[in-house]
Length: 187
Figure 1 (cartoon, rainbow, N blue to C red):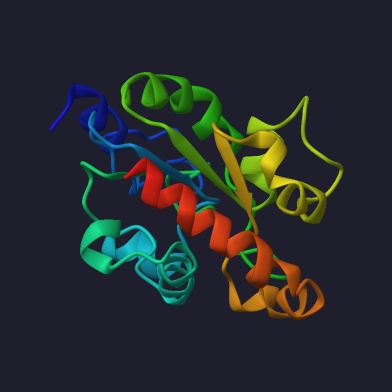
Figure 2 (figure 1 turned 45 degrees about the vertical axis):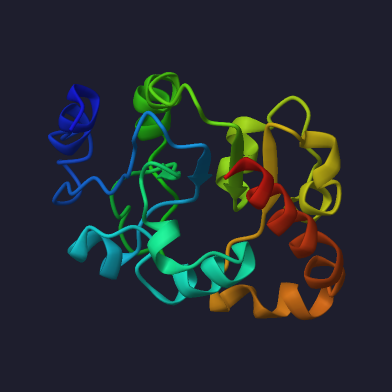
């Protein structure tokens, strides 16, 4: 267990608004980095990243078995906000910005073998593609090739995005096969 991981696990940047429970999985040998939004209540409580319905769909998209997905020597999981951000009027609140600005650079520096970063959802894409990304998540996902070999933008695999999936059939037929190919090459 690295000192950085211990520092993150003891982080209390958001203690004023919730009980901190940073959910992150890092190992210096990880080659694939999954950067999502923030854990939901179930993941915040159990401490296992992507251990919910969204995680099941994400693993299906990636074409990965659960054992490989949770093998930290292969996959690092680094959300934009490490703790559950709280409940808003229409769903969970956005990830707290202080988390990424405080930790992300140090975390990525601790992953020297990382070759591909999956940017899941608009928060990750706005943060990492700020100067080169499109105006919308759909533009970024549709033009994923322009961000390779470093980044691969994806929508969030939430059931709330089922309408986006129905409207953008090309995601399943064009993007997912290339995503799986990239992951096989990286791992």
